[in-house]
Length: 189
Image (cartoon, rainbow, N blue to C red):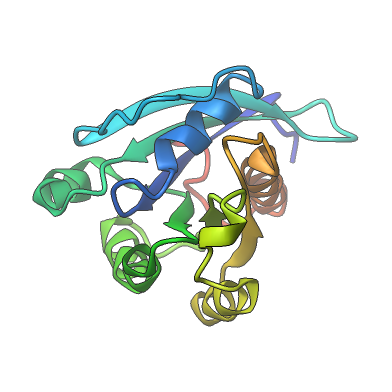
């Protein structure tokens, strides 16, 4: 099978409000040049696009990134808009509530997915630069990620630390799935 030069995938970024979703997305999109200094609440969903080159190939994955609001009042709308192939569930390492909500977000995203194909995911621990305020340990995050079948990662948007990791990992997983013909509807964006 000959692969196209660009493979498209829908990546949902979900989690509680103020967990760091929008900062994560904005720093990734700007290649680390733009860290939002003021909190700006996302209403429903913001859609962004960025291509990620796949190493040792001539292919790229074009990620359509859905930065979803963490407010529960938008869940009905989100469930109609989102149909992700890939997901990043974000929590704030200084906020127990955001960590406890991860399981609920995992359930929500699985229900929002219109097909039952495999969906690679990352559990992203944000705000690791706030070491003095941290209350969720890396072990707790990793244990939860394993339970969900996700990969665990940590980042700091403020310090531009490990921001690209989740997106690059998901793009590479998506490319592998497409290359192996795992899903029949992979290239639908």
